[in-house]
Length: 268
Image (tube, rainbow, N blue to C red; front, side):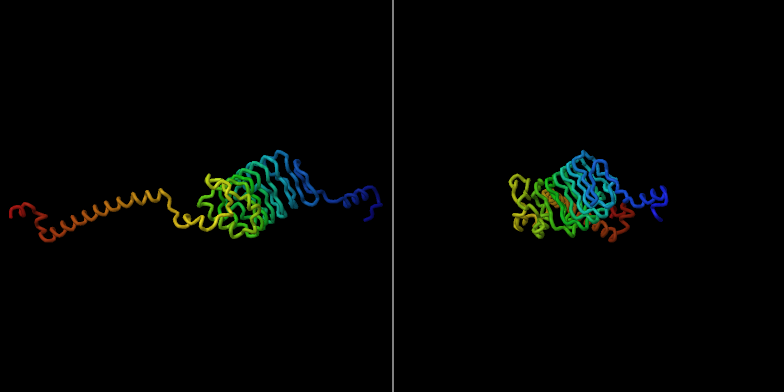
């Protein structure tokens, strides 16, 4: 078809030659043709939903996002970097990151996170870098890190770590993966007070000897001390009762008519 056969043909040609429309970009964001979406510092309280499926980088820092609920993100199969620092993020649902299986870098630093579960990061099988620095984490379940098989760089600095026996699984993981831990010198205990600012990586096996020897608390010992005397008294009562029943049984077998007519036995 030639573009010189009339106005209608010219219009059709122009429509055909026009480049396809670019994917939608959220009003509070800046989007590039390379799939980079910058939604930083726009007072957002949730993740924008009308993101293009070809988004490769998503910047959401310096907003007011407090919760990542179930499926907070649209399906972004090509997303490689997700940045959420300096929000007010205090909770991440275990299904919040579904659909982000290609993600390689996740920045959750400078938030209010206190607890993370292993299920949260299960969809992120390709994650290489995780930044959890400057949150409110006192501990971290070992399953959280074990669910990230490709992890190569981990940042945990500036958290109020509680250096009790509960931190032993995390210390073991850190000790076996020292090359993956960034900013080691900033990984410090906050409590108890006598260990404040003590480097977690400076602990050795001997530091956790009492944790490995026994896991019994004072309450367990109280229960054992209570059960012991009670069991002793119960055994005495049971033995006395059984002895009494044995004597009665033998008397009945020896002279059964005395049980049926006791006045005859009294007359003898």
